[in-house]
Image (cartoon, rainbow, N blue to C red; front, side):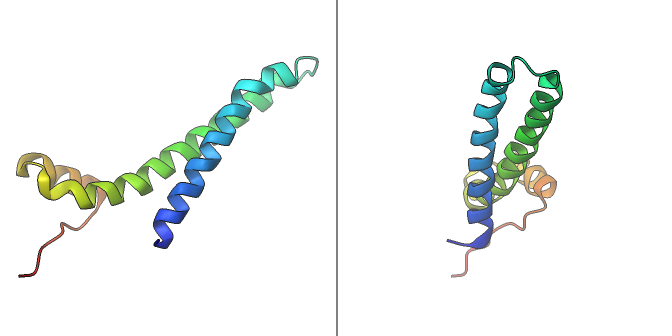
Length: 90
């Protein structure tokens, strides 16, 4: 596996862990005065991990599947993701 894919899966795993923390923190810290602060912090971390993993893994997915997309979708998508189109050598 290449390094980017490993980093993407690690970030996705961290996103899953922080999602469950986000759901359980209000119950675990019910007596604390900083429930909202901790819950909001975990929520922001969850979004950072999730969207960064989605960006990394999505980039790899789109670069492999883009040759099956129509040209009018493929070019803006590759330009937005800053991915070079794959050319086949014959």
